[in-house]
Amino acid sequence: MKAIIFDLDGTLLYTLEDLMISVNYVLKKHGMKERTLDEIRIFVGNGIRKTLIRAADPGTPDDEIDVMYDEFGEHYSEHCVDNTKPYDGIMEMLDRLHRAGYKMAIVSNKYDPAVKELNERFFSDYIKVAIGETPEIRKKPAPDTAITAMKELGVSSSEAIYVGDSDVDIETAKNAGLSCISITWGFRPREFLLEHGATKLADTPQELTDIFC
Image 1 (cartoon, rainbow, N blue to C red):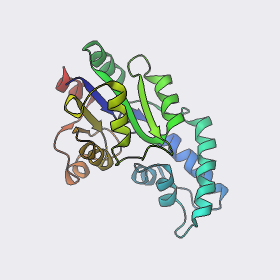
Image 2 (tube, rainbow, N blue to C red):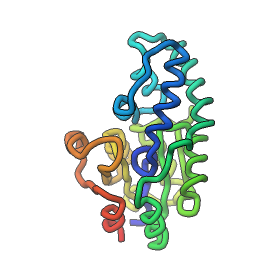
Image 3 (cartoon, helix red, strand yellow):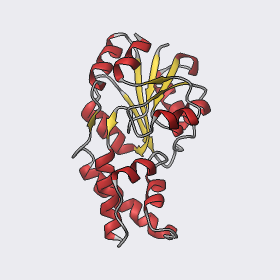
Image 4 (cartoon, rainbow, N blue to C red):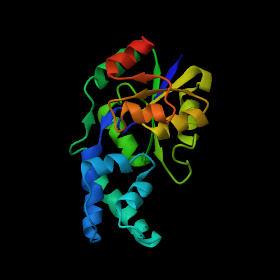
C-alpha cells in the first residue's frame, strides 16, 4: 500500500459547529427554523446543497435553495475555522504515516476552495493533494474526487485505500475500486456504518495508524 485517501469532515476535522452556524445563518436569513447540532450531523455528507435542502423548510423552491447555497458559501468561507479543529490524535497519526512514507490526499464534498484552505491551514506539512466539490468534478459517492486524487498521487486503486466516516464514503470507495476503512469517531456511529456495508473499522486514530504501520 502506497497511498491513503482521507475524507475530511468527520474524519480528520471536527467541523460540525461551523457547518451548523453557517447553515443556521442562512436559515434565519430566510425566516426558517434553525437546526440543532444533532440534526446537522444527520444532514451532512452529500454536499452543501443537499444539506441545505434537508435543513430548509419542506417544499423550498430550487431558486431559493440556489440563493441559500451562495449565501452559505460566503458565510462559511469567512467562518470555516472558527470552531474547526483536528480530532484528538490526528496530527500524531499523520506525522507517523508521513514518516512511514505514505502518500496522502483529502477528498471532500465541501467547496473546493474551503477544502484547500483547511488543508493548507491544518495538514499541509503532510498532505499535498486536497480535492473538493467543483462544477467539473462530481461529488461523492461518484468516484471522481478519489480518481482525481489517485492521478495526482500517481497511484492505482490497488495501491491506495480510502478512509472515511460515512455511508457516502463507503459508496465512494466502492465506486472508485478502493478498499475502505470506516472510522467511528466521526459523524456516523459504528452500528450505522455496519448497516451500510462497512467491512473494516477503526475506533481511534492510533488504531488506524497501527493498521498501516
